[in-house]
Length: 112
Length: 114
Image (tube, rainbow over all chains, first blue to last red; front, top):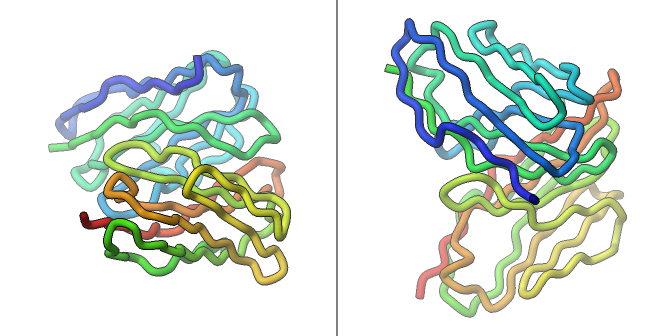
């Protein structure tokens, strides 16, 4: 299995909803990442997990809450989002010490 | 502040043309430079470059890194309409805390017309 999967593919939520994005990989990668990508912009790093521990938080608002329950799974919990949070949310993984990151297909999030 | 700059931002060519995409970088604790191709969804990995002057090649695509001048180029020969995409350059750095971080450029949007 050489891919990163993300669910759901699309998500529409209201500003008072609570939802979660899920990312999974079975490549044995111990580094996992969340990125946010707005239209016509490059991906922006949000969080990095190394060995299931949060190692980088790029000053992301607390309405985004990451979780890494095990070495294959990465979640992003969403609560009280704003319309400007609408974007493509990408998950990536890599081996520790190897720089190639492999991206999942993304979740297209729309906040109404 | 870490920075990756790509040029041109947009490029329109005809099938069969050869194109060169540029990427310059300034990051602390530079480890490697990566090229990705992004069509409608997630970026797909093309190349990783860590050593200066060694060309990486895959079919019609090739890339080289100059660590002294802090830049990389991506060449595509005999372009095809399927090469139309956004090409992202990213520099990999090691933060002071020991974490690994990828800094992306804004991308070059390549359009190949038949």
